[in-house]
Length: 140
View 1 (cartoon, helix red, strand yellow):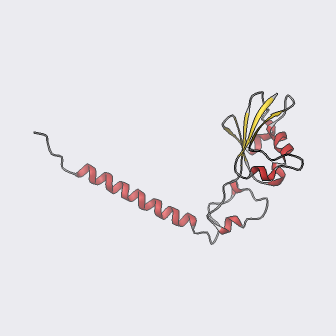
View 2: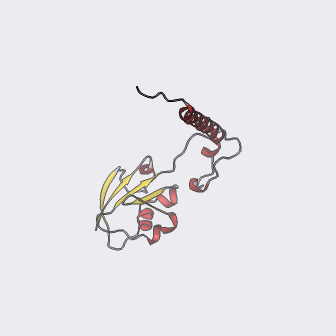
View 3: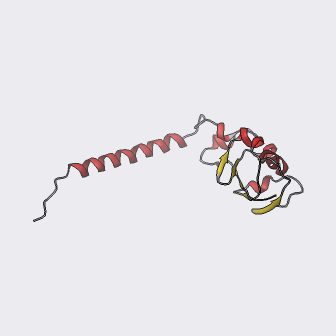
């Protein structure tokens, strides 16, 4: 069977030894191969946290070994999204980012983000309130 694999971001940097770096490539696989076996073949599970998608649907980590690939499947591997907080970037190697708390001590990003979000919501509510209380003039 033949599938197409796409690597997003820096996932190609985590390809196992002997695998040529690529962004998108077709692969010929044996029938019945699972998404988990493909992840292991590429070396991703041992190297870094990632998200896998099959035909546009997210595949949970616990379902990787149960997801059997089929001919014509489109598989996408996405790296964890990082940035914004030095405390999160300094997480120990192998930490699962999808299970990390929203903020670690010393991380100001969430507080600032939610403060600005609250301000925008207030402005929207005030704007809607003002729009609904303005007197309307009838056309003559």
